[in-house]
Length: 207
Ligand SMILES: Nc1nc2c(ncn2[C@@H]2O[C@H](COP(=O)(O)OP(=O)(O)OP(=O)(O)O)[C@@H](O)[C@H]2O)c(=O)[nH]1
Image (cartoon, rainbow, N blue to C red; front, side, top):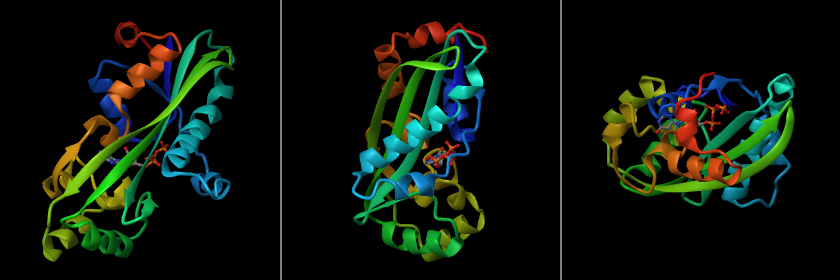
């Protein structure tokens, strides 16, 4: 069975490979702003699951010659201070966010879409969001500036990482750590089971 990760995220790929999966990567290139614009009254969970599903569905057409595949799409955003935010985009936005985040907490939501695809046709799907509460430390302004200068915060949802430089500034989490990094292993296991796939079988499968 082919396992297709519809994401450019090196972190998602790393989590899956460390957990015994050898995904084929197919970047969806979905216009996330366009999807969000079409969801004016959606809840945060609805936004991240809609984005995850859009990403997964986008790559299905490439699989016409594949008899049996699983396609996984994900999307991560941070709910903080009453807002749902993705990547900061600029150093200025990253700094403004960190000045607010320091000493506080937010909820990192990751939407997951798991599709069963046979010869390019979606045979089954399972979609859900995982939530992890993140308690931020209180870095100094100089530490925030140094962190932003590395460029890392600009590449990630919520302008922080758990497993890289940002880890110095996270006091703790309540919930699934893999979901914060980009893909929840326990939730993905449950979604795979819902479409008739046992994750342990995937450990032995090749690309
Ligand atoms: N390493 C790491 N990456 C994180 C963390 N939190 C969020 N990210 C990354 O931030 C990015 C969130 O943006 P998304 O829009 O979900 O995904 P993307 O990177 O744009 O890639 P696509 O799935 O192709 O859209 C993902 O690459 C996540 O892996 C973290 O704690 N650690």
